[in-house]
Image (tube, rainbow, N blue to C red; front, side, top):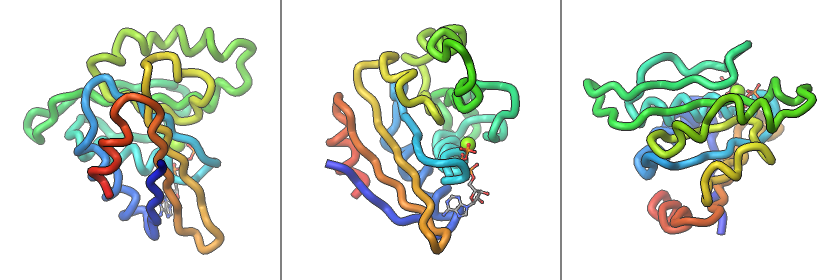
Length: 160
Ligand SMILES: Nc1ncnc2c1ncn2[C@@H]1O[C@H](COP(=O)(O)OP(=O)(O)OP(=O)(O)O)[C@@H](O)[C@H]1O
Ligand SMILES: [Mg+2]
């Protein structure tokens, strides 16, 4: 069972991220897939806004993972760990590089969102949400959410 939503503009993508944040909690892992420029970081920005975390969510040039602490003034209670494994694509042993990030240490207390992490981070927790973004010819985006284990299916149903 997947949930598919059309996102006409980047503002819609931000808004959907904020809605998605409402069902997120510490210990969650979101695996963001889809081609370059599909909107993975844009969606993460919406999630960060919804969670009420500090710091601009950007596409890191060198940094692979960044911790955004919750801002109590905006109702934030849980940190967002945003990782982008794109630059690990060329690494001899990407899995070892991921191990070095020590996501294990933060995953239970944070919402962890990983771009380009397919095949690298699924083992961090026993369930995750797969989020596939695609760009259509008219430049609108399509997001497809696929629950993998845990209670994700029930939580997605709340988003319908
Ligand atoms: N409906 C939309 N949703 C998301 N982004 C959109 C949309 N329409 C246009 N855009 C634009 O597309 C770009 C998406 O960039 P973004 O960095 O989020 O992609 P990405 O998937 O993270 O790419 P990368 O793989 O390089 O990290 C932004 O410049 C954004 O303004
Ligand atoms: Mg990105």
